[in-house]
Length: 157
Image 1 (cartoon, rainbow, N blue to C red):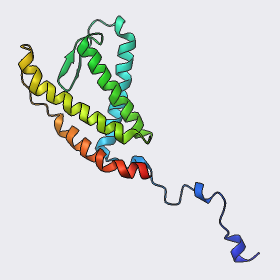
Image 2 (cartoon, rainbow, N blue to C red; image 1 turned 180 degrees about the vertical axis):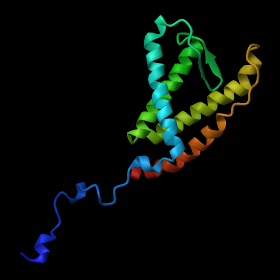
Image 3 (spheres, rainbow, N blue to C red; image 1 turned 135 degrees about the vertical axis):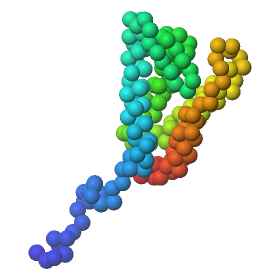
């Protein structure tokens, strides 16, 4: 056998993970990976709260300035829906689904809209809720920008 016959390309070379393998997950910064795990837990917890809500008497729920004492109230259902959305997006990002960046952008826009409504509109409509500066807007803004930057690279991998 000559050297050329020993170095022939394998038909399975395209499946070799050692050659130029880039994970989509590697595109995500560490701070987003930390939030992914938090929202995987939060989304799972929200689903469990919705399932077991009839057995609960008082559960303190809050996100983006929306507060509830039970999952079966209108604010409680909104909070659970937001957490489940965040959990689905976190799942998609962690398991490198193709739809994940688009879902993350939608998630960021929904979060920014929710914070803005709770900060600007609701205090003037409801006398029980006062104006608060929603600091969640800062990480949500950077999350939106980062996911828009990642989106094209994510799809091409």
